[in-house]
Length: 493
Image (tube, rainbow, N blue to C red; front, side, top):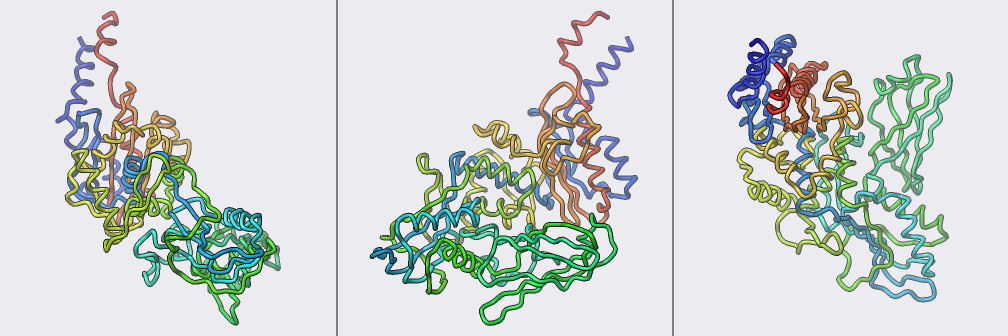
């Protein structure tokens, strides 16, 4: 009799109305951290059954869980063969090794465009016998409109030089980063910069101190860039521990200057000559391709977005939704130019996709599609609907494979190692100064796939308190559930 009561109680726990409130362990964890119940929005679904719904219709700041919206919409609308492209183009003739006009470098939202790729493209020009360019280097960023959203924009926070703050454009090489290798002794700090840029050097005004090498970033200050006679000097600021070796990437050189100096240095290295200027423009319609590069297919880029939570790549895919449309043969095709901004077209594309999947977009606010925003908003119901659509998608394997595996990789690699969710749940995380969130898929104790969305917004969720609440919820879902009724009935009483 007692066994039947226990089974009935377990089954009751899964009824739609049984968990209208937060699970007791989650509520207890919030109380212990002094976090108010109205600071969290939660939705847990198993199939069509709602297991937990707490303020699920309230628009919340999602932080980087917003990347799930961008990446699933990208897979669905652009398709799994979508690739960004970079091209070297020209309209002028080549006469005895001389290009008699401008060389155009046209960006096509190529997530993998790097200095190494540029060198290979320029080597292709040398292989065609081109040794001198008589015109200018024209940088074509026109795929996105406006072409430079970073110009004049105030910094998001106190670290504008950090990679997570890089704002994309259609022609972003090396993500505009300088890799600085820093190695110190008791008395000296040695610096090496990659990639080499024409007439750019790196120097240090850092003070060597006795400190833990692992905490070297505590003394980091924003570098300064000094310009004189066409030369740039990047000067590192702050303090650095003695007897320490670290590498760090910084975004401090304007991207127009960055590409121009990278081109000049690489072309000279390959034996080419160039005396023109670096300008911004648009490739002529009659220009021909001299060299080209295509990025990896979109599913691979999506994985690089969601597992480490890459803002620049997410924003690139979001803008691609407004500038490119799927092409079953080539993987992408430019949308005809219009007076609309690329952002407005991308925003509309996402909303139309949501409506097609019966997801109400009321209250949804998208600023850049990455979650690095103080204005983006989404409800748990909307995110839950998106995750359910992800389970039904033709590209469900690619979408799920992009998400961090709990206790294994990505931004979840160090969390919930002692939980049954470890190795079984796939969750995208989100973190800002006043936001912590998770969204994804968690298998319960009986192996049933559950959709889990939780967003905490508030000033009292730092120091790991908000993360502990979310981990408690994920662990509760992973431990919940009962064996199928047929299996229970088959056992002897």
